[in-house]
Each structure stands twice: as C-alpha cells, then as structure tokens.
Image 1 (cartoon, rainbow, N blue to C red):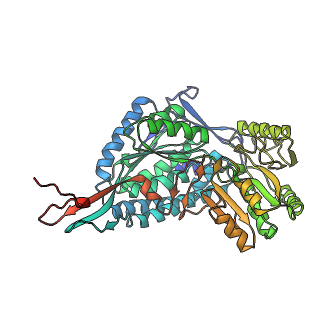
Image 2: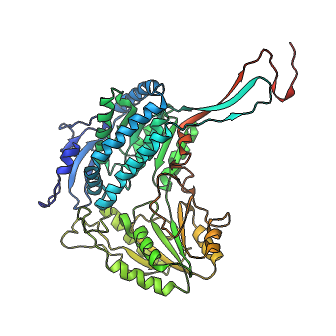
Image 3: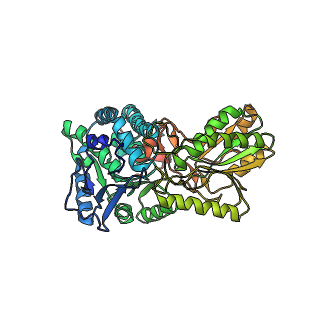
Amino acid sequence: MASDPQLDLSFLTRLGVDGTHLSGTSTGRHTLDPATDADSPASLRSTTPVDGSLIATVASTDRSQYEEVVARAQEAFRFWREVPAPRRGEVVRQIGDELRAHKDDLGRLVAYEMGKITEEGKGEVQEMIDICDFAVGQSRMLYGKTMPSERPEHRLYEQWHPLGPVAVITAFNFPVDVWAWNAMIAAVCGDVIIWKPSEKTPLCAMAVQGIVARVLERNELPEGIFSVVQGGREVGEFLTTDERIPLVSATGSIRMGREVGRTVAVRLGRTLLELGGNNAIIVSSQADLDLAVRAIVFGAAGTAGQRCTTTRRLIVHEDVFDELRERLIRAYSGLRIGSPLDPETLVGPLVDADAARAMQEALEQLKASGGEVLFGGEILDGEGFEAGNYVRPAICLAENDFPIVQEETFAPILYLMRYRELNEAIDLQNGVRQGLSSSIFTNDVREAEAFLSARGSDCGIANVNIGTSGAEIGGAFGGEKDTGGGRESGSDSWKVYMRRQTNTINWGRTLPLAQGIEFDV
C-alpha cells in the first residue's frame, strides 16, 4: 500500500481488492491467494502512479485456467442467448444501479491505480453508468428489416442473433469504461464477455467483476456471462487465436492492433479495433479564443495526455497564432500537478516512470528535427514527485512532417503549427496515418461546414467548437485509417456484436423461384 499516512485507502477495502495477492481469473467474486509468489514472472504487480508503491500482485491466468473460463463462458452463452433481450436489459440496468452505488469508490480506485485525477476517474465510472442506461433501451431495439419479396406469397426479412463469447481487451488509460462500452451492449445482444484488462490496471477489473457478480448472484444467473482473465501478451494470444471466440474487441496501440487483426483474420474471426490517435484542433482566425483555450488545455493536458483522443497537434491561423501561444503558456503555468487523489490537482502522473522517459525521448527527437520546446516538458522531482512519473505538460513549436509529430506519444506534448488558408489546415489535420478525433474552432459557418464535408476531416470524430476528447456514449466512437476502423458505444454499434440472418418464408402453395427462373421437375 502507499506509504503516505495521510492517504485514505478505505475505498480499496469497500471494493474488496485490498490484499497482498489476488488470483488471476474471475467469473465472479475475486479471491485472495496468499500462495501466489509475488516475484513470479507469472504475477502482475499493480503499483500506484501516486508514489510508485505496490498495491497488490495478481496471478496471471495460465492455460488450464483459461480453458476453464472459456468452457464456463460457452455454457453460460447457451443459457444467456435464450433469455429475452429486454430481460437481459433488466440485468444490465441493475449493473448500472450497482455502479451508481460504488461510483465514488471505483472512481478513486481508477485514479489510484491508473493515475488520472479523481474527478476523471469518477467521470469514467459515470460513462459506465450511462452506457448501461443506453444498453437497457437498446435491448428493446435490436431491429431487423422487412423487405418486399419479388415472389408472391413470400415474406423476406432479416433478424439478428448473438455471436457467442466476445473477448474484450482494454488498455490502462481507460481501465473500466471501455470494457463497459463493449460488455453492456454485447450482453443485451445475448453474448457473453471474457475481459482481458491491461496488466497495468488489474485491480480495477477485479473490482468491476465483483460488482457485476453481485448482480448475477441476485438474479441466479451463471457467473460465466462475465469473466476476467489476467496477464500480458500470452493471455491476449489465448483469446486472439481461439476459434471459439468469434469477436475480439481490442483497444491499444497501432502495433498491437496490427498483430490482433492479423491473428484473428487468419482464423476468419471478427475484430473491433480502437487504436492510436494523433488528434488535431484547427483554430481559425474567426475562433472564440476563450472557448478554444479551455478546450485545448483540457484536451492536451487532461489525463496527463494519456487519452486516445488527447489533443496532440494545434494548427493555428497565423493571425491569432502569437496571441493563442501566449495564452496557452499562461494557462499551462497555472496547472496544478500532483497526486490524482488530491481534489485540487488538475494533472496527475503518467502511468509509470517508463512513460515519463518516453516523453523525454520524444522531446529530444523533436529538437533534433528543428522543433522547440516553448514551455514545460521536464520530469518533476522533490516532495510528492519521488515516483519519477510526474511531468510538466509541454508546449512545442513543430512541423507536421517531423517524424515524432507523425507518431502518438502517450504524454502531454502539444505541437503548435501555423496555417494561412483553411484547405492547408485541413491537409495538415489529415496528414497523419491516424484518424480518430479532430476539431475546428471557428464562428464562420462556411469554415465549419467545409471541415465537416467530404473534403474536410478524415477522422471518425469531427467536432466544431469543442475539443477532441470527451465523446458522448450516444454516438458511435472510433476512427479511420490506422486507428482501426472500429465503432463502439452508441448509434448502431450494437450490430458488430451480432450476426445478421436473412429469412424467407413461403406461405403459399407454389414454389416460384427468384429472378423468374423456371425449373420444372
């Protein structure tokens, strides 16, 4: 546990995850496992970015345990797919209520294990609650279509059926809500879910699994509807190579996504990939700069730059460039950096010291290309910063074609660049291989519409007068190009978790063939 005697860790006890060792698989209540060797290479060490101290060790799932999880999931699926969808929605509604009851504690655990400030941790849990509410409604709207048949006395329609066990592989930066985006929608569709959380945030998954298990137990439902496996790459490969898993939803880096995509494609499985972002905001000469500054600072420095929707590039019209640069430096100078559990903190730590070192390497590459650090970028030291993973968010001058600017650095680095004409700005915005989120700040309706048109942003998300982060659950979330092309959460994203079936019913006494074919026997 953390060494700070002032740090109240009672939320861990209330969530049932405080202990020295934890088992690595769970279909319901997680268990303490004192026999686990904390130094074993098969163990995951959950450390807090607050001060780098050990919270617990979690045993990785081995092959035999994995087989048990999949067998239970398959058995649960045979039951769950027969439950009427609105009834499945009622179970999800109860999960949402259970999350409401534990919102503050789970939000603090997210902050403690991952490092985002507590308000953002609670906001992440609120997204889980929101997607539960959304999924409840979706459970009554799994619509198929009825089409006119070309043959008399025939009915032609389509319906949707659940797929089976769905694997959900999540990243450390959103340790709980991305699972919920997938799991709650998949559950109302009739699927069962096997979750492999990031090896950096295993306790968040264990806490969520415990919350869900209480709901399943109250409803006398099989535990295998929701399962957790813990571990690193090897455990991920169990899932991606398993032909019993028809869909793998994976969130992470582009490199990871390419490997998952290739592996699952070989066995003709399905993937839903949510990969890296390299998101830009265009600031027009017609922008409301007060509005823009707030959005830029939150988008670039929030979660210490560890969001896939983090604002990484700022493309500014030359007429307002100097003013905006100075306003951003002043705003950054006032950011309070510190423990994510301190309510006064606006920027918490990076997830670990390795991430801080990666930020330093990125800044060195920027300078080697001819860029300049205008503000920040250093690793902080002194009291409260002993873990070596607290950094000051950086503002830099850069060109879009710098190699480091073309990459996603998971840290709070904001690259500033100028433009003259809107088409030039759009070309810069689109001139990276990632295509997740984008934004323009302008009060000119023509500029806004051009940005949203077919010749505008090539991203999956395009915003006007709001930042690149903070997507709502009602819209489909995802991106294009190397971001993977997947869509999660709202709109009609439910369809990826189901299989489409076209049905024709002949209710007549003859057998006319399609396309007017004659075939008499």
